[in-house]
Length: 227
Image (cartoon, rainbow, N blue to C red):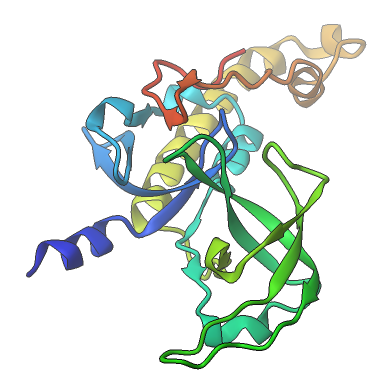
């Protein structure tokens, strides 16, 4: 099997990084049965991210984490430009410094249609006005060309490796919640005027702690979230 095909098979998931909020092509692996490793395509191993079950204190944390994964977005081809009608959600690139290209979600707001050239292959010259949903331009509109735009793919099923990790964490959270509830049950009437366990969890919901990023690349982290 050639190396390019192997790479495509391994790097088959997109992950929305916590720090710059951009989408990256990643490979996910499960190490030591319960450590999720996220490896970024075209980056060195030094920027890999590791996640373990103890990073997550509630199902809400886990659900937010799950939303950061999805299938790879697909580059729109010139002859497919008519699919990009107002209201369509896309994943598009933004250029910052040279060689720093990042992808964020946006909605197609309008299309300035122009005739396609047909010298060899069809070439789209249309301009697409995008309303950015997150990232540095969140809430703003900018113009983009078709080469900047990918279509977001539906999530039919979660990546099997990610799904396995999520299941491990769910069991840990359920086990932890059960252990915390036993002392409360034994206190009986004394707890009538106290907050319920659920209310305590809601009131004390943890603050998100994000990884440190520099030079436009995701860096390894020691811990993502904590109370």
